[in-house]
Image 1: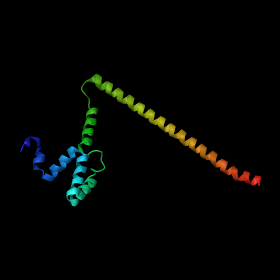
Image 2: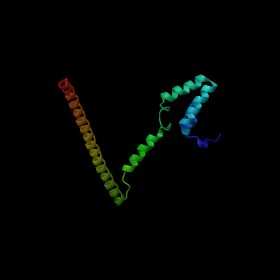
Image 3: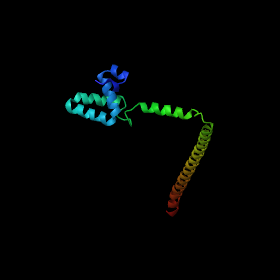
Image 4: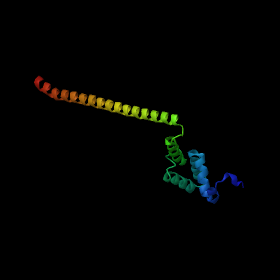
Length: 143
């Protein structure tokens, strides 16, 4: 057996843990295929896999790989650290400040847009209500 491909954690892990890690590396399709094969060969195995996939949230996540969020956090932290090059760090700080200002301006624009839409809808509602209020009066006058 070639132990170079196994990590120390994997050599101590049982076959169940190694199988889970292997399926995670292959993705959600491998989990679904294992579940279908479990139903075909021995239905309790398929049912157990389905229950495990739902319980561990593998069924509804975009990917079975949980380390992506950790990697994204690490990359975000690395982006915040100074690079050691003062010119680049100044450029990065200016760019981030400009982007924050643009984001605030855009959010203010969206808020004004929502307020204008709400006002237009309210004005339309009031106009319709006024028309409905006048309609019965006109019918009584015609009678």
